[in-house]
Image (tube, rainbow, N blue to C red; front, side, top):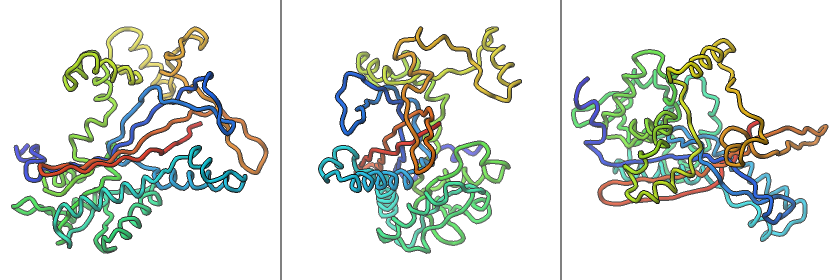
Length: 337
């Protein structure tokens, strides 16, 4: 491989991050209730998503629906503000992309949104586009392309400027490219490599995406690894104590090999045996089992389902050698049955 191909950020030191950190929630039964619900606190971090963090538009509207419901029930504004915090991830994402577009210092440059061939999150992405338009990015300078299309229409100049059908690209916002399925042929890999070699501001660049992988997060949770980045052992231990465990099934021991064989035979279903819940401590239960019970409610027969409540915070950061700009937004709550 050409040496320049791996020196991704040599020509423009500017980093932009879309980060969603997900946490399992734990209930403290001794805590007071408010509006007939129990306060919860974040217990264990289960993953970090640095690429294509989605559902912001939907979560934002669910928050508005919850607030509206409380208004209809007669709660005052102050009570609603305390019960349901503001949740505006789309505004934050759009402002970050807009800031990056401004930092590139080319008003005619485009924002390239890399999308999947079969795009299930198109509505979520469209709200980001609409917010960009409201901030002042011309409609015709927000372009959606798949990685396959990128291979056909992207070019790189000797100065490492990225061009899309003749238009210079300021920002590449990846809403695809996070799974091997998005790279069915060498064309998609070639397109990604071309983007990484350019001076366009990438969200994320490939190094940050690699940090997003479960294997990297698994290694980071091992003893001694956090210490490489955090000098004080006590601080490193405190950080590591917030991680939920991640285990790889790549050992050569008989138990692991049997588990792999059984899992493949059952169509990749999760078959690892666990001891009864009552034999586990509260912390151990959080490592493998949803600790909360919630309800789905609508104007129909009552449906009582066991759900896992997963909350996350969305973070945005951009920096270069001259300045830093940082913002955060909380929310992005999702329910999984």
